[in-house]
Amino acid sequence: MDYQLIRSNRKTLALVVTREGKLEVRAPRRISQREIDRFVESRRGWILQHQEQARQRMAARPVLRYEIDGRLPFLGQEYPILAGEKAGFSAEGFRVRKDQPIEPQLTRLFRELARKELAGRIERYAPRVGVLPSGLRITSASTRFGSCSGKNSLSFSYKLIWAAEELVDYVVVHELCHIRQHNHSAAFWKEVEAVLPDYRLREQALREFGRAYF
Image 1: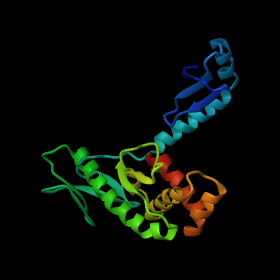
Image 2: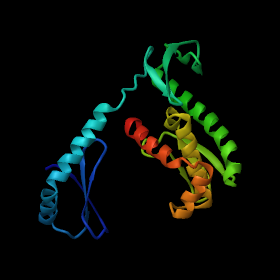
Image 3: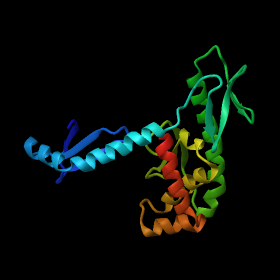
């Protein structure tokens, strides 16, 4: 069985099936290759099951077409990509110039839209949480929706604004609450619940969104 071996100072063996269905084996530095292979073989059933689940999720992922007449999501709805004199967004859809590469235009547009949308939501929810973030950064991250630094600066992936508005709000509130609690303790979740009593439903829906687009 093929796998990528990652050795570190950890004390135990662990298996990780990536979202692409590839197997990673994380092992202590001094453990023998024979012992690693035995461990992998003993977990063959678990590995094959999770690899198949990963393949099914990848097959179900929507295909994003960065081309004229393609469709892309914004705040939970899909809009067409249209030809125009300059890149922009309206109720009709995304407009791009045909004489320039389309995907970079849309990426820049999504980053602009994300900054505007997320800044507005931070302004709305920060007083309710009782905090003031030190900054806002828009990234191209594909593994996490948002983060809060030790200096209370917030970062969000521009792809977050592909999600429905209630999910975007949840991520914003989640990261704002990390300014008060830099952890996922019971106290942290109480902060989130005080602002969004239905946060568990939103979190579940966000996971489904993430499996589809991230």
